[in-house]
Image (cartoon, rainbow, N blue to C red):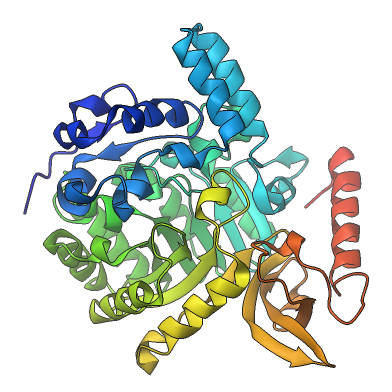
Length: 447
């Protein structure tokens, strides 16, 4: 079964990891420099079971969890490198790091505009971007078993309180859901809610099982624990209580979905993750899987086909292929939209129909989740065809639209409308939505 006693590693103690000796001096120095800007944390399960230490620093799981020099642009890297070389005080290095962090788009996709309020009280631990779904950030779940170097929620982990989404008050969540009967789904996210003890998680979830919240039909839990610490579901001291909680949710007639993050097939290769998946599935819980497509990690269709096939063999449901968000180290991980579509298409062709529940490649952008459907010719113009899978306005959903062909664009704001149009069809309404938000937010009436 392996070592199920959890041990984490950060900048403070990473040199205790014995295989780290295989890194050269420059690579070790890069961990220190980049780790002072972007968060770094890993654990003994990742180190002992997932990383191929004979292939570092190129190994995908090593790159997924350890900082590398290229994750900062050279200008930013040199600022921190020089500060460390000159032994500047810790406070000075933190000040320099924070300045860089604010330049890395810490709130992509307009997340600041997703925060609702109730009775004039802002709810900073919630986001309500799409009509049917509320995201909830339990304050005790704002860390992870290990940090992904591509993570768009990296601001949660770097100590800047104004960049965090976190909330303790389950009563306010309850009241908000009472007042917003259009909400059918609550997604617990973070960080990682599975870092929490079952007793704490249960305190939030038990309220959602109240008959008064008849509108709540699905409870989702976003987690990387299956990939990074599957023992959370099998041998942790409160794992049995967690499984009983899952059973209770399902018995209540709610749909419980674990939104599992798997970024590479190797994360599905251990007996520990197979055991955890089997135990979770035995409760009647669904497991839906998702990942961004990432340069240096999984930018080959063969890897995606293998990953989807393994997931289905474990009775999981492939759900999303995302585009790496425009934040943090996107310059290192980002893949052009056309290339991402080709990876998706070629992988999709390699699997059977039961694997084709997956949707993508999809951008979680400011206006909504936008799927790249492909490249086509229309009106004598080569175009990129897209559609909304989710939108700030539900009327946008499933409506195809077109952008000028651009093989270098890696995000929506780099695309231009096709056919000589000045704006995409949703842009004017999006501007109105944000204008109304700002106006109502100042008068404390935004909901």
